[in-house]
Every structure is written in structure tokens, then in C-alpha cells.
Image (cartoon, one colour):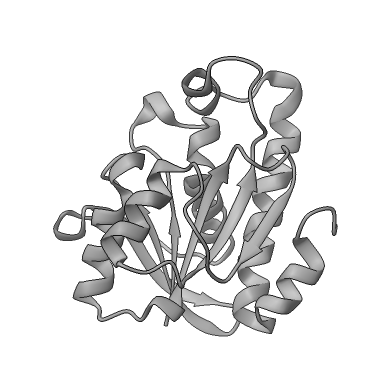
Length: 188
């Protein structure tokens, strides 16, 4: 089984913010595949299981807030004995331009505190990640990531999240390389 973790912050205050790109992608996958999501207090996460791309998949939204995402990711991984090779983490990234995706099989957490937490708690960086480009702000980083998309950008943001969901489906059905060919950086 593959585990798709979408990073974000819980609560209405953070709904539809740039930092919740991972949550948005998981929500799209849950809707597309009829996977009901339920809070799992023991895991500090909202979870659902079903089939995506011909494989059993578990969708997970950590409820620990972004900077502590690793605690929920590792709780799920430990409880279900999940190998790092079966983990996909979807998250927002200011270090790539808005509207682009990057798909990597391993690597550093970069500037993303949620990913730093995941790498620290899993004690490895050898897991797949789908980075959703939200662009670098001209001013306040916190205001940018915790802010909602401007009205004129909302349609583009929804298309971006849908493409990230498509990429996750392709990873499960046809593999990482095919997903990279189709969806990574400028490949549309």
C-alpha cells in the first residue's frame, strides 16, 4: 500500500491557504476516488483508504500543524509498518515558481519546516515528494504561506492542485519517471 501524506495546517483559519497545498491535493484525490476521510486521534491525522491508480492507497492529512508534521507521519509509518519507499509527501514550496511541480525520490527538506520535521522524525530523506510551487514572496514569508490565493490566482491554484493530484495518480499507476515526464516543471 502507498501512503500519500498531504501537509498543511488544520482548521478553518488555514483552509485554502498556500501552505495547505498538500491538504488540497489529498482532498482532490479523496473526492475523485470516493475515499472517505476520518480523524484518527491515535495518529493525529485525518485518514482514508481506497484504490488509486490500481493500487491500494492511504490518504493522510497530519493534524499536528505544519511544523510538527513529522510526528503524525512517523506515527502512521510506525503503526502500519510503512517503508519509506511507500511514502509520498505532497507539500507547498516557495523555492519553485507558482504553478510548477517538482517530483523527487529523495533529498533535503530545503527551507520547508514541515519537511524538516518529516525528515527528522522518519530519520531518512529517502521518500518520494511532490513539491507544489507557490512562488517566493516579495515581502513577508509568513504572510505569503499563510495567506490565501488572490482572487485572480484561485483558478490557477485549483488547476495546479489538480495537476499535483494527477501526478500522484500517475506515480501509482505508471511510476515516478512517467509522472516526472508528464507533470514536472513546465511539462504540462
